[in-house]
Amino acid sequence: MSKATHLECSLCQQRFEAGTVQNLCACGGPLLVRYDLDLIRTRWRRRDVANGVSSMWRYAPVLPPADQAIVSLGEGWTPLIRTRRLGARLGAESLWVKDEGLNPTGSFKARGLSCAISMCVELGVRKVAIPSAGNAASALAAYAAAAGIESHIFMPCDVPQANYLECKAYGANVTLVDGLISDCAKIVSSRKDAEGWFDISTLREPYRIEGKKTMGYELAEQFRWELPNAIFYPCGGGVGLIGMWKAFGEMEELGWVSSARPKMISVQAEGCQPVVRAFNQGAERSQFWEGAATVASGLRVPKPLGDFLVLKAVRASGGAAIAIPDSELIDAGIRLAGEEGIFASPEGGACVAAAERLIRDGFLKRDDQIVIYNTGSGLKYLEAYSTRFPRMPAGETDKLGGLITPR
Ligand SMILES: Cc1ncc(COP(=O)(O)O)c(C=O)c1O
Ligand SMILES: [Zn+2]
Image 1 (cartoon, rainbow, N blue to C red):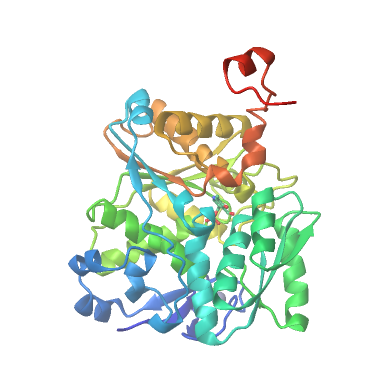
Image 2 (image 1 turned 90 degrees about the horizontal axis):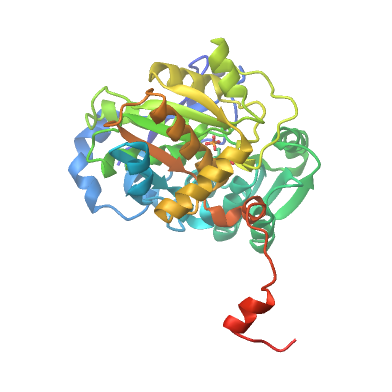
């Protein structure tokens, strides 16, 4: 079965050999994996996919590692849930939640890191380092543990407790940094050569995006190969959105989907919205967002490396970029939990709030097929949600009505 043919710079189109350890192109552009899709089309048919494994590796023919290198904890093939009460309240007939909170380590980051760590196994990389907003660190720590690879993690000192504890439990080397993910990235790049670490920062290596693109394949398959009209995606680095866009292009080349594309809606938090600002200014690239602050820790990325790719996809799709204040994204997360039984991450809550806005103001039609990405589980954000639900000791009356315990 054919795998990658080469890597291609997303800025200057220079080609690099597939199956080699690579970071960015010399021009600073992220590298994208390319395949011989003409050949793959003759060997792997759309109808064969249904017989694949129940994980993102059902799309292995368009993923880079060889089968024997794959490190899997069961990532992907997550549920696509049709909302009942949320859609009805908004008058949207076909509103869906793609629930990525069910992945190993509780977020979609598992997809990217399963693929990247598998490539580390294939290429013989023994030590990896990552700057992370939180969930990527948890996923890296888990997959590195599963692969027996040494991991070095740098993340802001105020990441959710769950991220810190998971990384420690998985045996990673964790450094908490008094700063943002951009400060963590500087530490990794200044130390990696001396330490012999492979820098596994998102888009600085070509393979995480390949895992994330499976969200696009999966959505197409779950919608019986007809893409929805709109996708709401919470944009930190924006790599999930770029990956899905890449997947749609590949599937069109494979003859699996038409040229119609969903409107890609890039959702950020008001306290860190570089992509929204660039979109509104008609700019090709974003500017560093000073003083980035939001409880949606995955969205606290002040200058995404792949901003130009996000902006291109959003514009080409006729989509939008919008920002949601923290109080609204938490409220929307709680509404989703109460209406649908899905406890979303604040990033997912931001997409719910954004969908509510764009359906109400008529940007989307009420009979559009609309998908909200919940990229992580609310269980990883107990600090953020506990601000809404302070715990009170039971009063005397409650105790008399229920269980009476000795003092
Ligand atoms: C829960 C969650 N959602 C969304 C994002 C943003 O991801 P991307 O880099 O694909 O924009 C992150 C990144 O940390 C995250 O943890
Ligand atoms: Zn280049």
